[in-house]
Image (cartoon, rainbow, N blue to C red; front, side):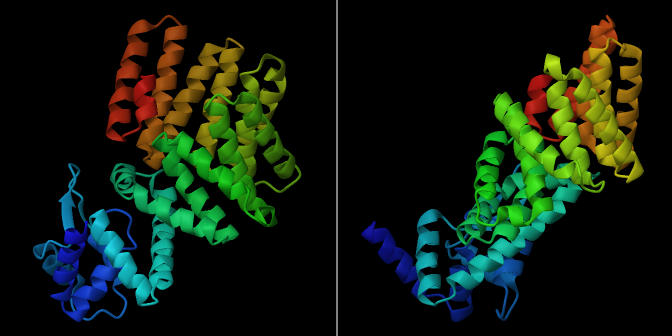
Length: 356
């Protein structure tokens, strides 16, 4: 280790001031990142072209460049080089400045992703989010450690869409439980309830049924008396779906889903309305009204097609396959499963792949 350290120090000493500056700042990244991320986080007051400086550091074997199978080119530091860079950045008194820039950048990307992952560019965005996962963890951890409660809640809510679609349920639960424990979290009721909704669904889905329903009921209690919003729709849908799976809660579950569907239609939030249609279809299945359920699934599928949400086209198609098998239509059911599986593979959703 001493020999390696001496080699790093010798190589570092040969760099010019601009190269040293960029090398130090690169240490705030916990894994490789594309050039735009380097420019956004590290480029402040650096003279010269960042790409050219990076190339120089690559040629001097101080920065690693990798190309993924999806064609993403990323730059990063080996861990021992990163530790050296962190020491230098800390010695310069600039660690907090660039760690904060790192957080701000990845929170911004997560905010974009929360929208884009529901649209026609979701495959490219999924690839990007997977590649940047370790940096998201580092940025969210710092936000929590700094007790920046509102920013941490927003950050977590932005990332939830990715956790949901990439089936990172354990990770989602881990972060969201930390978020809810932050001081003053309930001072931001709308954002707080969004976290409750996400945690309720994930917890219930992971098998902690009582805990999930308790969280959903807590969210419902907050939103029930409030004006109609997307958060209210999600709250009603979550609790309604959970209750539909419980025998004694069937009537209330159906009522909540019907109300959520009406609200989502009135406030013109099409994605949540499509989800409410799928939930309503499940309610019809519980009533053995398979024809009505098929119509509702088809309506939801068309909305997801219009929105360009390929992932949920796959989800709705799988549910349509389930229904066809219930109706005894084996050929149609298998065909729907095959279509859903092909979609799930394209969007890199491991849970939906397993379901199919």
